[in-house]
Length: 430
Image 1: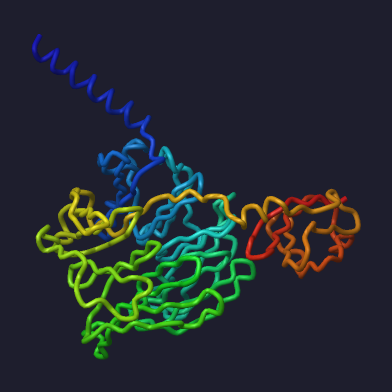
Image 2: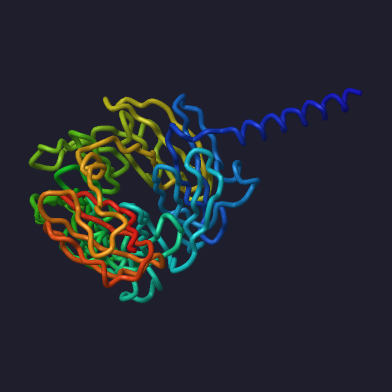
């Protein structure tokens, strides 16, 4: 009888756990991407809710024990979905953002993918291609409505982190198995690429309203041409290197965090803070992590009022996440999955001037027979696509009707760029 009740209690507990798992909500909190051991499907996602409670293996918990994949490299979010880039699986998995249930798997034209960013209704994934071929690297463009790759944009070797601002994408070329020294700037409308030289081995990017910040680790000693790290500050107005901060000696900083007043980076296991107004590299660390026994810093981010430093421990056992307050005091630590390499949070987009501009733009007449106009003053770029995604017309609108009488009757999508805002409108041609 005792065994019967023990078994019954175990069954009930398991059932309750399963129910709670399926009802879990991941709307508010912090995600930790755990890389896992390369060559095995041990990548995973951990979640810290707003109360500080940790859940490991989120994807498996919400998808009936399914493995996430091999080598989790990057993560990103849209309003409805979470995306995990799996480097050795050559895949991007798409999940419902709040339930983390699997929605789609993207494998077409994924060749050692690294990181993901978004602009409008497109996702952009950096890909190494064949790691031994220095000429086949690219950014894959995903239609987020169909989860299909609709274009690839050739770029220089070793594209890594990618960030977006106002319809422009910035890609760091760390160099793959080599050592890069540039970033690519991609127009999300035309896919046109401009390359800008920075320091050696650009490994981390952050962007605010005025500047792009590039952390360059510098060439390592084994390269035969060791160089110091550097932080490069690039104006978003003209993409010129406004300021460069070179580290002393042969220091090799890693990672980059940003808030409204400071940059944060990691050097020799310690966390440094540099005011955006500073004119030189700080001499002393902001947080000395030796008291917390940090072994191998493997990822870092500044999110809201906390700093998160991940630790690979010994590259085999489960990793850790150390949490610090804005004043530099230690708060707590967590044990997560193997090789935690990134800390992420979905940031809801608040209404901005661009949002109000987008909401006020309309096509008229619609349906159209001969042509259409836009209810704007000034000029705007436009591109017209048919339902197969093929661009059929493009140009610049300047208070004169765009002729469509040469198009077949049907439904089209018009992508409009006006005052830095990108939007898409449906057009019916009679």
